[in-house]
Length: 372
Image 1 (cartoon, rainbow, N blue to C red):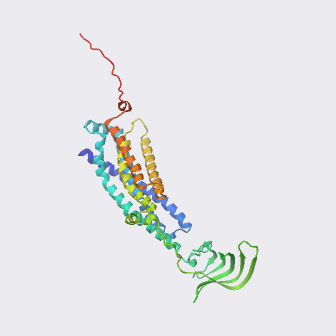
Image 2 (image 1 turned 120 degrees about the vertical axis):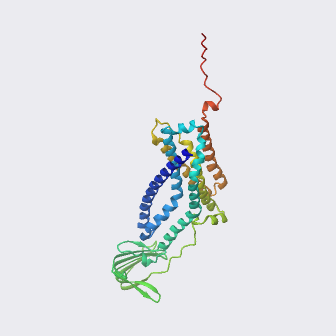
Image 3 (image 1 turned 90 degrees about the vertical axis):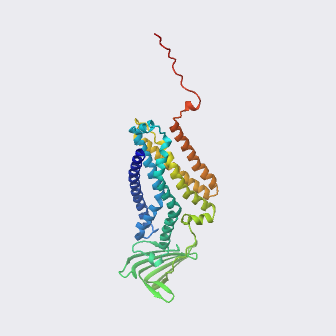
């Protein structure tokens, strides 16, 4: 049908343009946030672009759904403003007849959203966690940066080196603060170098001072040294075997139905169900008054999108905490929105009004016949 093909072409153009804009905005915001995390030591600065790519890929289900929703709203609203919908209605088609062509256009988007939410999303989260853990597993020597205070992996030491030589094996004005075994130790030296001994790698300090005190007492022990060796472990940090629930595959979540797993499942499945509901909502809310500002309908639609996704996040947290059942959440949220959107669509399709529903109709004026 000519109308269907023209509708799909316009939807394709609007969907593509909207997706490009949204991806660009999200990439910019993600880049700024990732650079901030890298500056705080959460990621390796050389992995910033990689982390940004994984993060944007994790946002793609939401971006695809939002692009589809905005494309439907923008296309149908333009058709209302330019009276193209009048031609559609005059041809004997109702508002609900728009759903078949829209669903034929949207089903590839549904398939991509389902694949991303159920398969790709846990993989991207796992890759981000792996990059973070690899950077956290650096040895204490690798954490030392010239001119910066750096904390050790165990959190018991703070290092400062004013300047490193070209070989990165020695430095000047070394400072080490240690809190361990109920004691606080501050060691400073004019220079230091790294030496490998049979017992391990040592930071050999020269011409310095060592202050040692017991926590909670006023005792202070001061000693000076010409050479002092501080052993620094180069073994990778042992991190507890903990796998975040958002990095587990969908099959693993189904196999282990804990409250946290059910909460993550409700989020992933909810992304797909929300995409379907937004098509119906888009048709129902696209009717606009040509006299109103054209951005009013779009702002209302974006508010609806944000509200829906906030309910998704809230439901996930409630299910994970055990306060809410996943079945009740899915039925109440997605089923309830589906019913409301369908009723809203039926109201526009059948041109229902409150006085029709209440059984009251406007009285027609009694016009008498004129006889000759």
